[in-house]
Length: 207
Image (tube, rainbow, N blue to C red; front, side):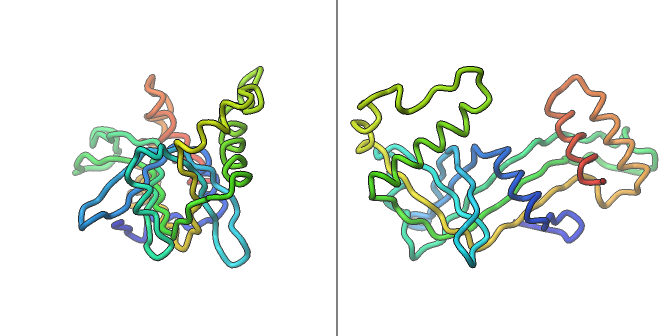
């Protein structure tokens, strides 16, 4: 993606935390010269020695995209964070124009389809555990009995060994500290939770 120097985010821990926080991401492949995308929840794990990270997910077997998952071809996974319009009236200096503040992480790597049932089930269990963890009485795969193993053939699990991560946190870093602070405080006071999330990200990035 277009990545001006002042918007680059290169801190590995911050990028990893961002991907885990906004883990419902977009998988993009290219088939016969045309892009194809699926929206999927991903597990984000430390990679094997020598790699940055690995991603784990699954999709319906009826989704034709799985046929494009080849260990010989890179795929792209896009993690989208909070975003918001920024009015020029929020700045302290003039002249200005509108802009959009946002954070996104693009991950590139080679996929591998998981065929071993034990590993397949681990992906399912880890996904469920991750997304149930905030509930008072988390649901577990075991409660479904034999139902989950029976439906596994209708899904395709895969992992992506990551080769490159690009982080773009476009949060007014090209503005003066005073202008940046004015936008941040405006967003933090907003009634819109999306705007408050952008404000919180700006404050975290400035610390």
